[in-house]
Length: 457
Ligand code: GAP
Image 1 (cartoon, rainbow, N blue to C red):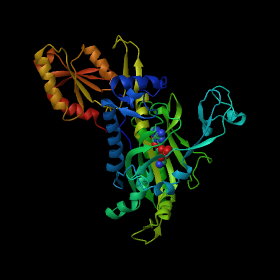
Image 2 (cartoon, helix red, strand yellow):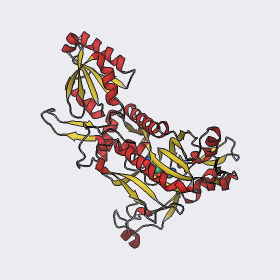
Image 3 (cartoon, helix red, strand yellow):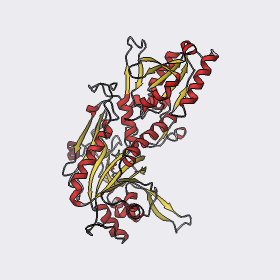
Image 4 (tube, helix red, strand yellow):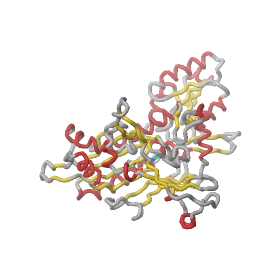
């Protein structure tokens, strides 16, 4: 997964890391993200997405699906349900093991995850916030419970899925039998997951309701290392291609104490933001664990028979598991910049340097003045043509400088301005967001020019 090097992309030199509060404020102000149930005081760790947010999410999802399912002949997609048979979560180990151990400070009442406490505080049983005494650890299960059925006493307790990938194991045999695919092959899915995170926080980074994407790639055990290495690089390049600050991306190998008992290795793709180096996506060596467990718990044989050699085995799995929400957050943190006043912009501006392919609005069409009918009619005509090809916005409110700044702040890569010269020669000004350069283009050339500029290459 590589992209032709973009000569206009930002330099990778280290610029200051953006405080999350600035991105939170922009998201609310401009309609990217709102706190959920805000009029009732909100629910921590749950968010709603506004008009721009939903466009960005759709673009992120579409890009992942396109690059994982459409571009790879050996990968298929499914969409499984959020609610499954409860036994699924016993087989997966979530009912028993998906827990956080927590302590509370008796003085400041703050709650801490035991595995996040510094060693010194753990040894001395002291709160890292105020030095107060800590309670004994208590265990919390992160699975969100729900019930199937309406008759009291006959309702079946189950769970909102704690990870989206389980559907893929459940549908693996159906996909195999209903398509002509053979090992090695992969199944992809994007979908919501729910966790009663005890310490949600850092905006979209750790939520209680979020959206995951998974590839589960099924292989013969002898080919596990080859495919693990292949997807590890593929996914890293995918992330690298959509950020400006390439030096803020790295792999982190899991240490022996972090590895699941069946995993020979695992890597996190990490992004560095104001909250430090944090996991963006995990590349996991799942071996035959998932299919073996589901075979055992369901009583169904999930082994695979090779058509040529007739060898029968439980396939091993390479998992790449990331999320729409962390991608959304990291892209905004990566793209946000407050530029000081300069020769080109006397007031300074806030700009989102989002990749044009992912930006919610691709082009804004602006008549220079809104009280000149010919300018307005021409601009509306251009907008009507462009909006069939890409998300385009018409804007005639405020002076042209303020309109440019508004579009910069929401990450629109191109503005098309209809001015008096347009009425004479049918050309418009095309202003590019990052360099603020302006060129003239004929109206008839605009669709081709812009499609070329905002399409992945
Ligand atoms: N099936 C493997 C799995 O679920 P995970 O590391 O728990 O692994 C995978 O989750 C990805 O899901 C993470 O890399 C992250 O992008 C996203 N994710 C996990 N928990 C999240 C949360 N509470 N809020 C937002 N995204 C989360």
